Length: 400
Ligand SMILES: Cc1ncc(COP(=O)(O)O)c(C=O)c1O
Image (cartoon, rainbow, N blue to C red):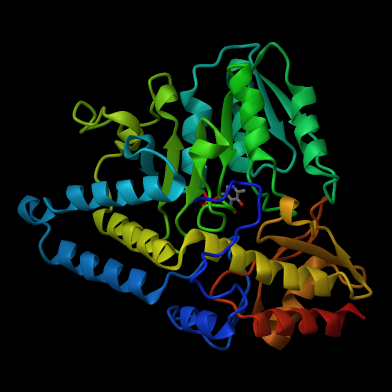
């Protein structure tokens, strides 16, 4: 049975435990990561596994060796197979899935596609990514919609508090609630299901930015009840660059306008396919997306989520013990994902980021200013517990 969104993920009875290091060492070997780099930046870009890379290259060569219409006939059925697997991953129907370039494109399609007019209100949160925040603000300038931005408390107080922040911003004029499933700023997991329920009761469109949960959480969009969900293949899904998945709930597809209309429009009106009529596609890339979906399914999303969270928790509990470290991310499982943000009292983030790269080849991210200021760790299943300990030790060395 699929886990519900907000519960911890129990591994299947026959699966290795989340901490079975031998099993995860084998998983790690599936990635051609440079052994000299300690890579903890899944929230930005994940490496693709060898199987995904091989399949991508195989089909790139196939396409370029013979770009004839005849050779390319096979790509549409392959894309449809990938669509069915994306739907299975997310608990959706295949007609509810469209292939985008990334989360940004998926979220912007929602921003521009809902038929809004001046005075309509959109609720966002301060820690949404610009693709689901500045995009709404640009639309507000253009057509006069009203943006209600819910502030972020760091660390989050509780799921109830996150929910109430959104609830209080809703009025009779609210047409859209656009939130982030797990933020890239401080890694807070929002109570998506409760917010979607609120939206559904009031016929408000609920858009969920899944950039930090697609391939990281065992997401079931049907159980969450959101109207749309956007994610990138090149983050936690460990798929090819510039590929993304957009889910639009069947009942909402008819009312959403496409962003691009070109050749293929008339033939592609079944379900969410109408949102991906982008002209000539990079067909081999979609084959690689299918391979990435296969890899997730092979390990199993409950196991992936449990392992990813075990790695993140290990980092957080150690970091918060270091004097000179201010942990900005919640440790409570119900408020957490794979993103970890912390500040060093002794060093500015950019200086610490440079030192850690220079001394330990620690590849992370940093935010120079603002309330999310700090260093960001985001480990995934190709990392080991030993790597987490090494990364924390490197921070301890400079934290003073
Ligand atoms: C929460 C969130 N949304 C959207 C994006 C944009 O992702 P992409 O650049 O793949 O479109 C990111 C990127 O880090 C993100 O963290």
